[in-house]
Each structure stands twice: as C-alpha cells, then as structure tokens.
Image 1: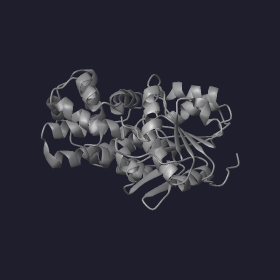
Image 2 (image 1 turned 135 degrees about the vertical axis):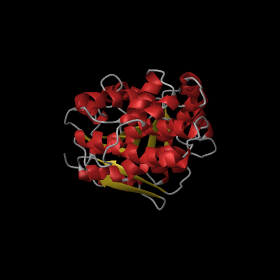
Image 3 (image 1 turned 90 degrees about the vertical axis):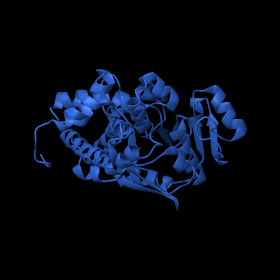
Length: 339
C-alpha cells in the first residue's frame, strides 16, 4: 500500500475512552489533529461532552477543542487512522466491530498491551486474521503513564510497523516539544515487551510489598528483562528492541512507580488482599493478571526458561505463597548469567 503523507487536518479515530485512549486523544488533538474518541459508556461520554473532561479517568484535565467524544462508532467513519486503546481481553471483539462498522479502514494502530486471552496470540495476528492484507497497521508502546501524557509531561514511546512510512506518519502526528516517538519495524518485539513487563511489574509489587528491598527489585528487573529477551527472540523479535523504550524502558517504569496498576496489584497481593479486592481498589483493568497465564503457557510450549513469570503464575493461579515463591527462585541451580 502507498502511505499518505502526515496531515494534521486528517482526522483520527480512537476506540476506547479509558485513561490511555483519552490521553492519546488529548495529545493528538492538542497537536492539531481533529480527533474522535469513542467509548461504550453512554453516561461517561455524555459527561465528557458536557464538562469537556474525563472525570472518571483523568479528572481535572480539559479536553482540547479538536477532541470530540462519541458513543457512535460510525462517527469514526471518515477518520484516516483508527487507533484502538482497549483492554487486551476485549481487543478481538472490538476489532471485529471496527471491521463491521468502519469498512473503509485502511490504517489501523493500537496501544493495547497483552495477548488474545483465549489463544495467547499476539495482537497483530488477530489483526491479520480479521483484515488480511487490506490495511497497514502499527503498535504503540513504551514507558507511558496516561496521566503524565495527558498533562503534557515529557514522554517518549515507540511506534512499530512493518510499513516504515506508516510508522513515520504516526510518529509525526504524536510528536511535539514534550512528546517524542521513535519508529521501529519490529512489531513482535514491541508487542512482547509491552505485554510481559506487566507480569514482571506484579512481581516487583509483590517483592516491594514484602519489603525485600531495592537489591531484590533491581535483580528482579534485570532477570525479568532476560526472560523477555528469551521469549521474544524465540518468537522472532530482535534482541535490540528490548534494550529500548518498548523493552527496558517500559519494564523499569511499571516496576518502580505506583502509577502502575500491575505494580499496585502486586503490592496488594503481598498484603494478603484477594484478587477481587485488589482490582476493585485499583478500579481499572490489571492486564498482567491474564497475561501471566498466557506468557507462562507460551514459555512451557516453547521451552523458554522464565522462572519469575512461572512463580507469578503460581501465585495468581495456584495459590502459592509469595514468600515461598521467592524462595523457589533463590533455590534454583547456579547458572551462567548469560545462559
């Protein structure tokens, strides 16, 4: 396909009016791109239309004039690019609705991090199943908290697409004096980095919740990165990708800052709170819970050594005591660090 040049007057449609979808919509609209933001909660969208603010997810941040919230997916029909920012468990269903309601879609992007829940497929595989080769697609990932992006604080991320021209086009739309987007052609690596880091952030939260200290956190992040690299390269990703924003950058962010839902979930588990109680307190989807199951199953199928991921899975799904899980990690046989 031939990519059109960057044009800020060409509108973009964002599907998903949670914190991340709204933050991206604010960024794009602030940059001058007419932006339509779709959400399925009529009450929330009507409030956004009246108050010009997403009070539920980003209170106190005014929506730019070029941002139009809507509950009608067909309102996005004239948009040059469709960008999904929905939880991974809803990705397939919402994407199918996009295909049905917006048959003219030619350029598709997503900022969703995770795997398809039932099949553990990467999200670009879901896109290819539903759209074939009729579109160009891209994935957005990196160390980006929605709150800070919406506030206009300095941020950098990665835009990955097998179409270099489309990646550049999106990067230009996102770019401003406080936001920098780098491009990549490694879709698989960017997807894996963005998904697996959520599992490791749960582990970091558990470790800190048990007061194991900074040494343990640093070791967990470093060895967690090794797990991401092992899985990613086995699946065809480029090792260098995991040294960048979508790998190490995102991993450090989600493991060390309490704006991370996955880290906060881990902290709650360490305090003996139930999964349901922890998620209720957080108030948003904790992607790492379901991702832990997908990643663990993939590691077994592909014979990839991922001991931290394995222990998180056993804590979440087998009821293993967190302290016992840590002991299991330290009792493993001595090995070469680079093996």
